[in-house]
Image 1 (cartoon, helix red, strand yellow):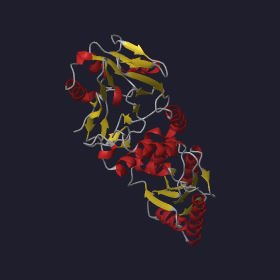
Image 2 (cartoon, helix red, strand yellow; image 1 turned 30 degrees about the vertical axis):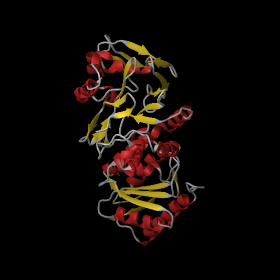
Image 3 (cartoon, one colour; image 1 turned 120 degrees about the vertical axis):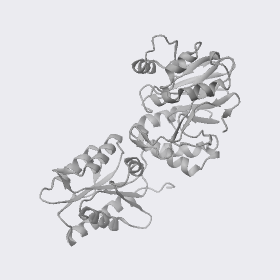
Image 4 (cartoon, helix red, strand yellow; image 1 turned 180 degrees about the horizontal axis):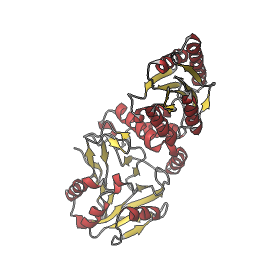
Length: 398
């Protein structure tokens, strides 16, 4: 496995082939926990790994130099997938100071017993000399925690970008040009949708601040390192940060006795027009990880459920709760579904959609038991209203 990132810079992290859940995010391609070692007149370790993989990290560092020769351990982010191994690493590196900002120091102290740690607290844009190399630290608050920062190696133009530009993607390849780029970009999109999506404004601010840096390599905390295709992921981030919609409609549904499914099918028929992508997703058989990735760049979506126990189906409630927390911006919407004796479903669906600040394209569509011809025609017309929103979305080249 290639572990040299650039001259005297090495990847010393670990690959987690088997992880399939990351606090509710389904990581079907596993992940990596990236840490980096800079060899200079003073040696620096950039981030650690999750606690259970501390031994792997320390073994990888020892392959390059004795742990006593580590001078600095930079912590860009206090989340345990990056900082979990910090206590063991600090103990194993007796001469190292932990470098982070003040908010990160506070967060680490709330996770671990840090009373015996040596600290070097940095402010935004402050530099740290390694003798013959220089690190510069940039605060990136809410990308995606308040204490987040990135670290830039000036002489080599390497940005250690923390979670920005990352992917949950296990691979023996360390670089973007060694992996399947379409897979990497899809996993980067999934990562953004499920973790970074609520923080579009801070992301845009960070992109603007870092845009003036010369960037030869961008090394995130998860997934492959960008050295050949960074322009592709940067353009994608600029689009995702503003929730730029595509000509795309997503129809979410769950059904008990096929009535709501039939309504979803009629909406699909009405929404189907040349140049518009339409996806119909049964939430009972699809993970929320996949669903939010599709919702992120759609122009409009529909959500349908029958009434169950004076509410909606639990699986639809879970999906809408997940979407509500991630706050996709600028979406048009439609609520629909059937009921038996209590039309409670529509009220709950519209409540969720209102909390997401989605704009209805028409009144909700509801029917008792099976949909008749009039209901199905109303669904097709509502699909046409969704299509009108998608058609009005500017093309990417416009």
